[in-house]
Length: 131
Image (cartoon, rainbow, N blue to C red; front, side, top):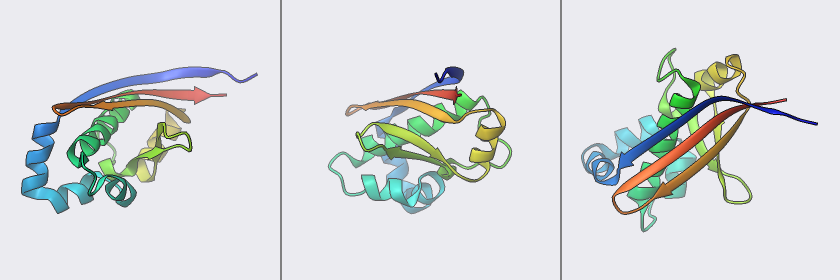
């Protein structure tokens, strides 16, 4: 029988209009520094691109809050990849320093929920240790 222990919880909300402004002024730099190429490919050109990117940005912030670290120890936002599972439900895949930090905290699983509308995007993330 396996068990789960909650290591941390993070929630974040992003105003979609603010993200649109950033995309208009600094699109390429912001996308490259914040998102993985796969995330950009999944959202680019969609009718609601800004909302989808805002939800993923909120998820990245919520992951950092769930880990309790913020962007410390040399982590970068594009080391946090919000990916769909086969069911379509989002999950988190970490690379680089972010993966090392999560491992050191005993985090090996995630529960994530994203929601967006015209004005805001929100994400909630639970960092778990599954045994």
